[in-house]
Image (cartoon, rainbow, N blue to C red; front, side, top):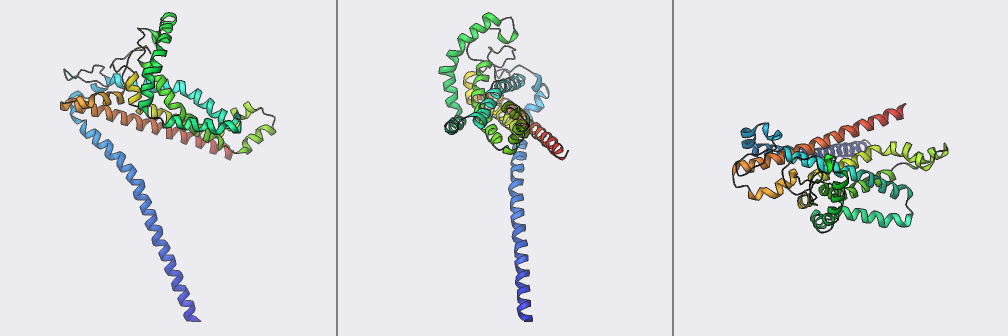
Length: 323
């Protein structure tokens, strides 16, 4: 009896130790995988910063506040590209957020079941379309349709700085529209999933208190889903900031700063796509890599702000639940 007991004890101990060993291997393996992501980001930032050192040493902080970009005379300033990137991205969000959220609410709350599936599939299909296709569509369809609109805006609203100048078709307005079209599927798809994940008890409680469908959506449903909706908007902003080919084909690619939405402009990604193969001098290549570093930093800052906002919203919801 004692031998059986001792053997069972030894088997149990061996199983525990084996489980502990496998748990340690599993835990450290996951730690390595997670750390590799951070390492890739750090290495990428270091390489971009290291390659940008000649430009940093030559131009200093003037690189960020100078609006002249002249490869012939080796004078480079990033301000027009930063301005074009931020303005085109926020213009795209200004158009895409109402449309994307409206479509998401319709698909999640109001759409008939037979229509929900096909429309959701088409929305996700739009997100998978390559950007070069959007760019070609912008050149051959959007720009010809946009020129008469720009002419009308110049004639009737030309007293505003936003609509002054000749109507080329290409420019900031075209870039904002093409980015909005590309961003809408992301905002719609993610927001729809978030709204569908809201527990039915939230809606039922609102209806039981006499709320209308709009009041239920505006109150408990949106309050429960706002963190996810905010994440969808930030995801769309990240797509807009980093978009290259479609914007390059319709924005005009002129490094100027203008309040007019009709004027051609430039973005960080477009400058990299257009000029990197033409950079034959080290200072030109270094200046382009510093543009890449700025784009990398903007992306990191946007995601950090998004995480902070999501954390703040989540903490507020948790406090509301406790109260």
